Length: 159
Image (cartoon, rainbow, N blue to C red; front, side, top):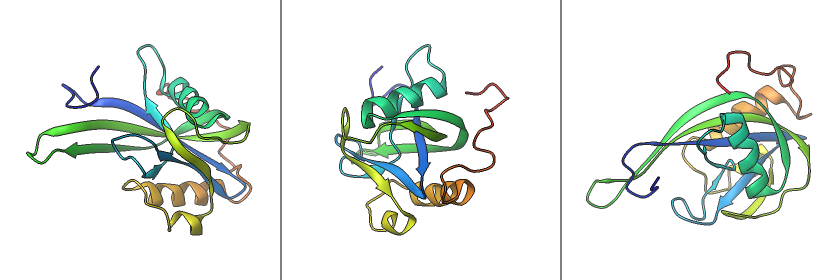
């Protein structure tokens, strides 16, 4: 599957991990979005569930283990070239995740990773919609990093 000038949208996942009132963020190390901060994630591989893809991507990009709790939001990332042609088109399912173990380190497609408070997020160059989604996650999960609904697995089978 070619990512640049694809024939169809590409399905990807992001993981929103909240721990002690801070959100895990990754700075992209390659196009598209090089230098931009976003939730860590990547492309879903054939045969993977959304949860499996998110858990794998977090391990590959950040070196931590998470447990996916549930889908949290869906966004489109459509980038066009100077001629107006679709250069990149991702449909990203952001998953709320619970930190299990490890300390984040930049690896794979990331140049930096780290935990950021709501105040710190405002000073980062972020992908569109990331700040709003991060604030919503911080509000739902709370400062402890474990909201009341965080332990409930999705029962609808979409993960």
